[in-house]
Image 1 (cartoon, each protein chain N blue to C red):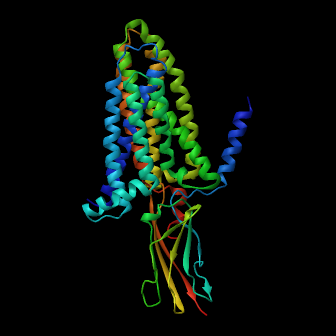
Image 2 (cartoon, each protein chain N blue to C red):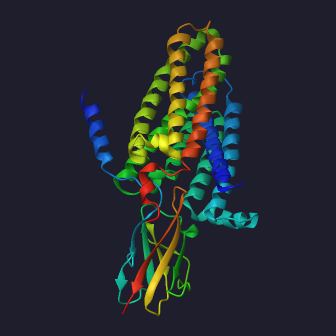
Image 3 (spheres, rainbow over the protein chains, first blue to last red):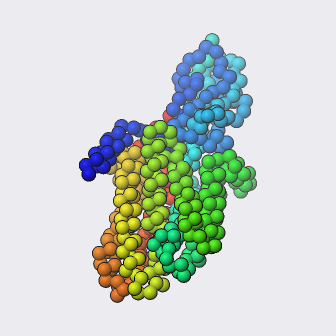
Length: 120
Length: 290
């Protein structure tokens, strides 16, 4: 009879050690936030804490002069429901700003931004 | 209407959808189990009423959610978003599939096959969990939240969803059938309450994490409201079990009043559930802006 309470306690204790997110926030990106890269990427890859409703996600990548350099809408990444890819056309060095609006599959909207620098 | 107004309206529609869905399922469930040998008891109208409420709330939720997804500024924006929401989002496909399942269950129920109907409707009930936090998250926490949500929703649907049918049954059945029905519903209700308490505790740990958040955040305030309503529901259930059930059939009017009050409180709990699912859990508030 002591097995059930013990299992419950272990499960609770284990669960306490994990952070819960419950909205789609940026987990990682490539290029990474704040990074300095030598060659311009063909696409910006964003990975979130939750699965995404990609058709309603929006990403703008702005050049140092404020011009949008993304060439298409965010694309889903096959086999990764929590990722999206944005094709970009970057020809000049400088600091680029990524402004994202995400919609998670639990219907919540989130947004954020970060920058990376292209410096050959 | 400002953003808060739209969120409240969406929450109301979601809560209404849940209440209707639960009620339709609960009627089928009770008909298939405790009332199985009472075939003459016609509960079809009650089930159809639940179905109608589920459709109404679901349609409102679908439209408002589509508007939110598309950040719509006009009716044409919403109309343009509808096919994308219906065909290319988990929310849209799951909501429509769940309503399809409920319709199929209703048709089976109408034909006099309550067990098949209840089983199919149960699939639609628990599928709601995939529209919540657990369904969206990956890893251990996501799996755990999803598991908790499935159990939580199933227990709530069986207990709260069956209350309107229980009310009608206790009103219509002959006096000698009241005590067996009320007595057999008690253990079922207690099992559901136990499941709801345990799964709510896990959800508290994973989504709220610290007790102060109950008083300092909107999510916590709604969770606290749900908790108070839930405590009131348990108090009524205890009264039913230990005071009114033993003295049946003489206590039938009092028992019916109490079950009616339980159903109203249950509706309030589900409306609160619709609202809490629109809010940001305190556990992830620090992540905002990343």
